[in-house]
Length: 217
Picture 1 (tube, rainbow, N blue to C red):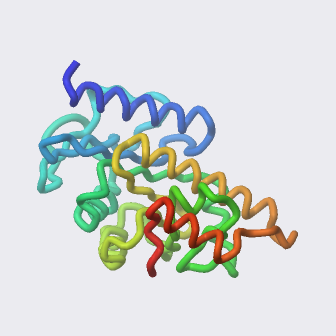
Picture 2 (picture 1 turned 45 degrees about the vertical axis):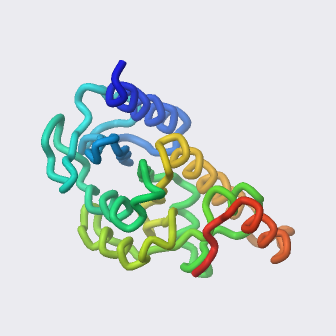
């Protein structure tokens, strides 16, 4: 099996896993993954993560033009911005409509610069600081401009009233980080108003140093 065929299968496998566990409903969410030659495999517009066909994934060239497969997601600009601003660290991008991270994005006291509270070690290790971006209409190219405005400093963001977007070194890493984002958001919702014991600054900095976490503003 070729590297491209393996990656096509992997995209569909991870997508179905995310769908089966209720992390993105209906025909929501999109995934992209970079091939060795710089082309992108992208989930098609209007597709359900539970029923993707590896042979019908969209293919974009290095200029992000559609060259093969079904029509790509309307969020191509969002994905492209991560590959452009974090080229060395980004081999895949995952965008979901997951319940708890979206809920957290709508609460008035959520910190837009660091929206995930330091509740767990893995939330910090896998995500760093998560930026809350404002609401954009789905498909608005301005989402890509908002990512570019971060100058490559964040691997994970949440679009307000919409959903999280995570870039990783490969598809597996991006999916695992996305799951960590949703689970930590769930913990934040469950413990809200209960004065949970969070990691202190020394504990956070210990994780940042040991695991080389991107933590600067």
